[in-house]
Length: 194
Image 1 (cartoon, rainbow, N blue to C red):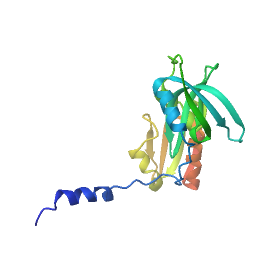
Image 2 (image 1 turned 30 degrees about the vertical axis):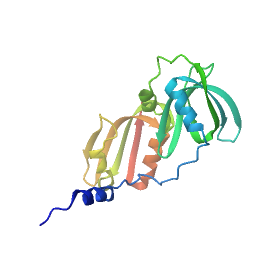
Image 3 (image 1 turned 45 degrees about the vertical axis):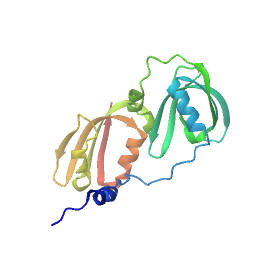
Image 4 (image 1 turned 135 degrees about the horizontal axis):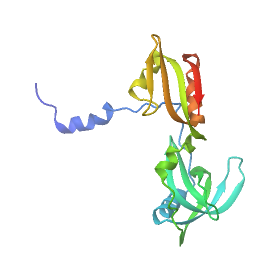
């Protein structure tokens, strides 16, 4: 047998790998021209950002913010920031920023802020702000993937024949409850304790 020439193998590589979404795929929302560039510039230089923003109800607002991190969730981009004069983080959807201008003035970086910790806190899953001990039963054929990809490092699994009993400590989020409801009757006996 003759070996296939390397260029042919390389051209076929991308046809050998696929990504399959775990939920209904959506198209990426449009971001106003110049917004992503201004946000990225201000985030990189740690300078104030002046924005015009439209909230979920369509109401417009002008504000000066401190950009702290850019997060992609699915096809959507979010800016984690602090509004000038406040000491708490907020999440702004980039498609709702209609205008953005990076300023020349820097801001004091909040020493207590860490983007990884912030994302792990559950805010992007609509956090209820606490860790819970979750227990439920799931049909074995549906829950097999939880043996390979556990919900948490402390997950325990008990084989009940046709079902698996799963127990784990997780952050309570609306995303978690949507995931559980998505299994329908295949998940039973859901129990939550603090």
